[in-house]
Amino acid sequence: MNEGFNPEKIAALKEKCKQAKKSFIYVTDEQQPDEDSAYFQFVGKHDGKEVIFDAFIYTLRAEYEMAVFDLAEQRIKEKFPNYTNYDEATEEQQDYLDLLIDEIESEEEVGVSEFVNIEEAVDFGIGIDICLNVDEINDEVIEKFVRKFNDGTLELDDSVYSFSYAAEEGDEE
Image 1: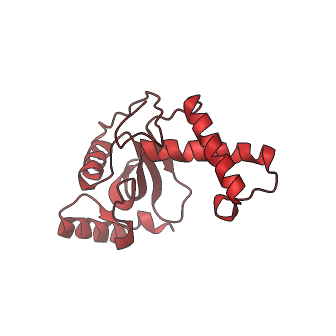
Image 2: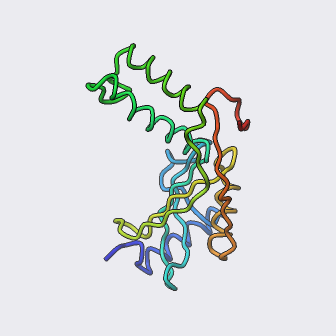
């Protein structure tokens, strides 16, 4: 049985949340918000049953940067078929990857929008990935998300956004 559906585990999480005076808890101390993301758990309803949601939340800017980087990594293999990953790349490959990133951004080839993906086939509870258009991930953002998610009032912005690696924090193109 998935422990995220276990009434005792749910009660224990509720108690931890109550003690923390929050509607959620961070999974580990290392996963406290790093401004761009956080890993946390909260109790909510799924298919009419109380469950533990195992959640990862991150900013739309982080999603954009990942999407641009992934596209650049796909394209670098056209020129450098032996490219495996950034950490093992030569200086020439890293420079070319930076050039590809600049090109992708200047052509505005990547756009991202807010989303919530729910995954039932996980080891613990219900997996949920959350991407929101906020400047940073903090307790307030997570509290607001959990409240709106649980009371059914969450509305996602379906606008498509592009950002720039070089832009200052909070500036959109």
